[in-house]
Length: 228
Image 1 (tube, rainbow, N blue to C red):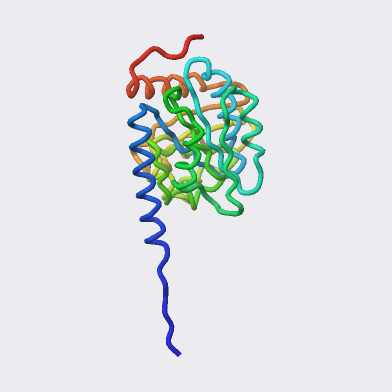
Image 2 (image 1 turned 90 degrees about the vertical axis):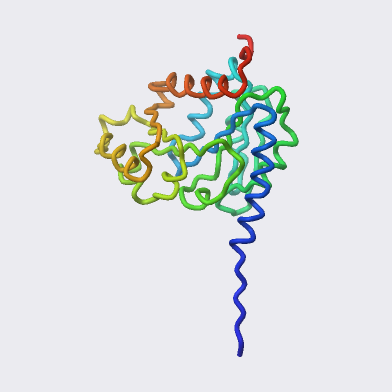
């Protein structure tokens, strides 16, 4: 009996990357900065976005695309903090978003009124690492409740990211977490990582994150921000 092996991964990724290139070109043409927010479940990614929409939405036109395996819960949470449509992508069991889903979601977003696109990827530090969505950069989020060796366990994600957010720092007095060691591990994997230390609950460190986003938008689209 003969056996034929069919390699699917490379053609699928090639098609995804072609679509991602279209998405990236479209966003760049529109002057929209796009970030792909990735994390394991429970890192506080949705809470971080809630704060960002609530505090920065008056200054920037922010669009959001959320990815979830079965529900629209995150999209419903975020929609409470913005008058804009929050795009929900239910993956039906898939462990990551792909570029085709982002391209389809863009059809309902007014890019001419958008400064910043935040993609909340499925909670997973493995699958999303290999999928380009057309974003300007990946932002990896982890928290002090997850262990400082997270970067060593998921090196590809930390290698792919340009920004790292260490969230829930308000819990540092109550958990055995070594902050300096976590940063050291992450920079062993990716020396270029830019770090932010935040608490979406207390607001600590959030202003630095907001200033970063505003600076990135201003660099791409140097025009007055939305009126307060």
